[in-house]
Length: 325
Image 1 (tube, rainbow, N blue to C red):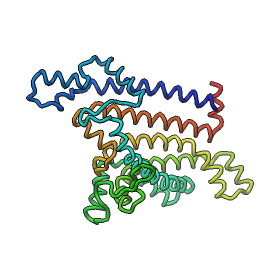
Image 2 (image 1 turned 135 degrees about the horizontal axis):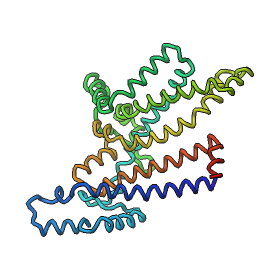
Image 3 (image 1 turned 90 degrees about the vertical axis):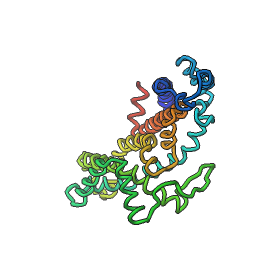
Image 4 (image 1 turned 180 degrees about the horizontal axis):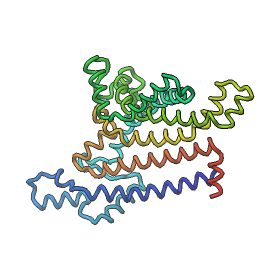
């Protein structure tokens, strides 16, 4: 098991190094922040001083080397616009985005697993066909349109929920969280539901397909032949065997929710990392953009590592094959 973990950690470190080079080169090859940050009427001397102050007068490999040495010390550069460490800005916004993503994934899991199981266990029932039709709708509707419709219905027409903002928060272990206040729950419901719809549809279809495949396996037929109660067959023999692909999808989709919550955060004015990214792109604040993208890469790498470890717990064959490799 230790060799398995060390191998995954080494692979993760290599991925981080490679992605840092690609992200840095890609972002620093786009536009010139000086054109936005400096007064257009400034003379060449002022432009040169500003360029040197931001380190933009150095060759790209030298800039990347300075960035890399700073990254090993936990410093990802200073924001061009606000002159504060870019990582501080990211960390200030991260709790809001993580809270929104976790809430969305909880909604998707709480609804997706039982609905997918029901559709898989009763494929010919009218309710199952309705569930599958609803999942197709969840796949088809664009996120921005769903968000606007949620605001139109629940905020404009019915007046039940606030359309934007995060609401009241409480400080828990140094983090400002809104899910523990009634006003915060009212604010987070619509953006979390908007993020959860696609993941919910995906989990329903994945769970249904896994259930249908597991129900015809020999071990399920043998358990039924022995007289094992149906609830126990589903819980022990069916659900446990379909958890491996579900764990993989849930892990990767959680990373994608964090990375691509930008549209939802913009529509609902949710003060998370996605909103910060949009504001930084508007002023070509390169350090903040690079820091955001690298944080997302780190999140994906960590999630993949956790998924690999869960794989080895759920299916020992994965651990054994990794040890032989």
